[in-house]
Length: 213
Image (cartoon, rainbow, N blue to C red; front, side, top):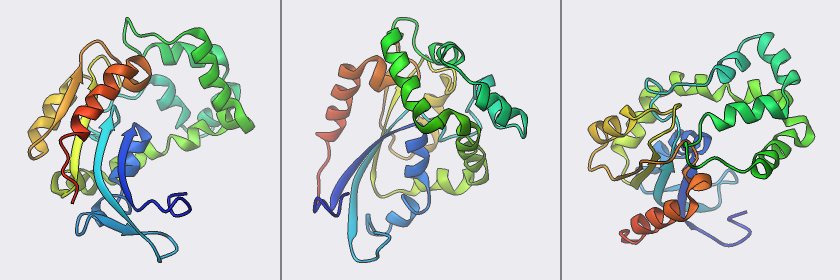
């Protein structure tokens, strides 16, 4: 898509699974030498100028998956549970990870479920969640990618997220060199859905500090 639009300079704004993609060797560590990577076709370079993340399990040791996520990853049980999933189970689990004052509307929840239902996507949720195991397998190199990155890094964190509980912000500040992080105190796992205007204003604040070379 970027090639078709003739876009070579990009800024990544990611959440959850997207954070993991940004950490991956092919999408982050490999970029640190010259802030760019070659496309799969090998004929174009994409320049990554900044990465701004939102709530995601970039530190596996702090990550607290929901019980449903844990069950879905179990052999056999996960497969059966995935096929039995329905809107009501989905709603219960989703509400638990939003802030107390930032619940989505039922219409918004149903729209989210409709996306998961598309082409029976809910049946393979357990398989998709195996990226959580990859986080543990690649924990050292993916965290080192963040620590050693030459690319400007920022984090926007919803503090009421039970999956990434409050020790997250302190740990981030401890291990990331020259850390920049914005903490939204009345927000859960989905800052961009719960408080979109606040989240976007924080991102713009970070973006406006960048000096693109």
